[in-house]
Image (cartoon, rainbow, N blue to C red; front, side, top):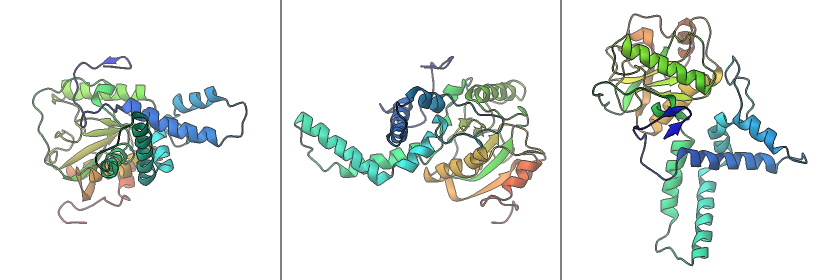
Length: 304
């Protein structure tokens, strides 16, 4: 398939195959969000073009999403979650099915409610409990070299990094995707690694980028790669912090997604890269920040 200017001929599915593509689901969520916005407006005539332009073509500034308007496509999952509860969505799906069956003259043999409930739970877990994760295919990753090592899940640790180079936070998909390709090229060509080292990388554009992902061992924290996920934030955070939205992605949303999906234990521990090996990473400012996170642990040998 074509993604932007990148042609993805071979890629690995991140979950069970489905006719419900991300594009279709995003369109459904956008329709709910924008429809709700339009239903409450008193402006006539409606300036639909302005609404759509602001929603889909927002460009973050140097502060990332700190100063962003709330009604933008990058925040669709947060906005959709605020509008729709699982119980409401379940009833709406059942109502739609009843209309469909009436039009077709069909009668379901079994009560559809349990199946719908399960489907809604899976949907909410995938599309509202987890942040948007840009796949390797979408950012244009080169193929993995060699044979990857599978992780034994759930893991117990999350190791926080900054990339240092690139030193500036990326605030658009184009910038962040280019940074991912640059880091992968450096890790493969200069370091001689099989792939980009990190499990996941956070940009300041509102997205998480898939590195080695949930299931494959990374090369991020020497001696501990099999024990936890290595999560980096693009930028040099020696004297400054990432945007608050980016911090929230790494501190709250990504690990919550991992725990609910059975990939991290609920009592997971956060360490900074410098606690594990001799390095300045993740930078003084970011290390001081993660020291305030609820799952952070100073000790490496005792429980916190």
